[in-house]
Image 1 (cartoon, rainbow, N blue to C red):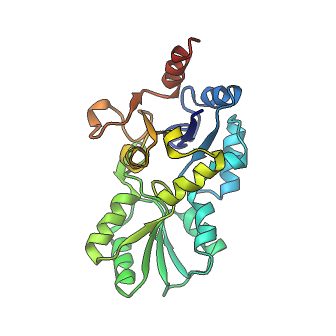
Image 2 (cartoon, one colour):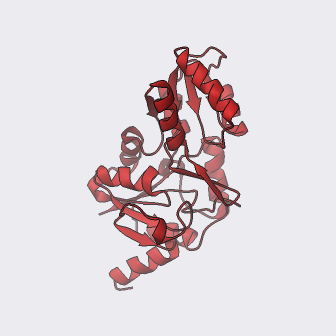
Length: 252
């Protein structure tokens, strides 16, 4: 039996209104009906984990908390004794301040996603050069906001590494640690898992290198096949089309 890792933003819900994309609710219903194991794997940093789970459930997605993982759940184990200085959107900064020790002279800088200003980048660089470690919540390739595409957190982390000589650690996708934690939830090795996402370079290519099958949906970061610079195993318009493909393969 194969299982699924399923991205959320850009795959199950849109990046603008955060509402279900075509075929998304039906696809989760299909997996539940067929007793196919799945985990929702998200780089959510804008809501507390339990809050985001409830939001998705209220939209009509049928899953429980054991079928969900985000990087906030990872760092609560990994960084509980580290003094941090958070950068990112307002909600992410609030979450970090409410759950961790923070300081203007931290042991580490931790970054969430946002459109960073030159002043913020400068401040982060100065903090790193004073000796702080660099952590990223995830390593997305692109960030979509108000239908515009910006450098993702992965691109920002690479820029900071080049500028300061500081390497970094990532807690969400596509870190192997994150994927291993997700695989434990369904009890399958990577070669028995298919990952579905809108992020080719931030999710699918790294997952494929670990042995997973990869399915790219064109409902988020990538809008056209012309923009694709690496090959996933399958490209579909949306989850509705992917579910139709699965139905044909199963003779339904």
